[in-house]
Image (cartoon, rainbow, N blue to C red; front, side, top):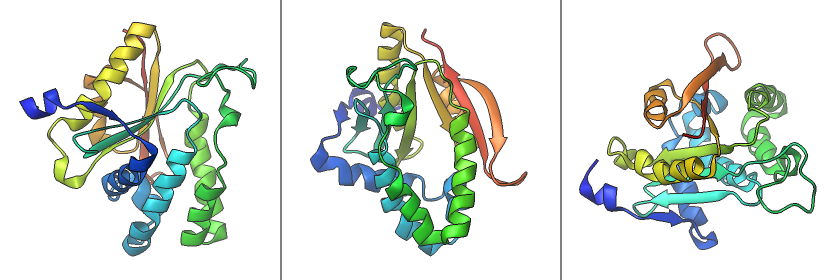
Length: 216
């Protein structure tokens, strides 16, 4: 990691900068195994990814942290801890899972791109992945990605490390699903441990690695 990246400030992404975060994540996941399975046709995928990432960000609950580094060359979306017994009038970050955003925009991207039958099959498989998420309160790394021109420079490590240090300071665990086996070693260096794997769709479908990081 260069000194420039080590010294780079972490940006809290403002509403005015969300479109740039969307563009970064759409580029970062354009060749990701999960997303090439979701959207097999390259032309359709390129058209769908900005809508898909917008919908994914909009699904994050109140209190989510949208962060970036180096002019959003790398961006992340963190969901705050939730409690199973949270009530509707609790503070942001305490809401139960069912108070996330409306998934209709996410469904619409799949239906428009794949047709209704395939879209609902894909959604069923994504539901299997979501069902693996632990019930214990945790910070959930919903998305993290680096633009193609900035990979291999340590940007994701620089971006994620302060949030993980904050988790440690506050006694919070963290969780993610790695959709690309090549990234598992990165997350292991950051303290995550593999808790399981599953293939979506079929035995040769994308391999999802679920990872948990206890507070250090």
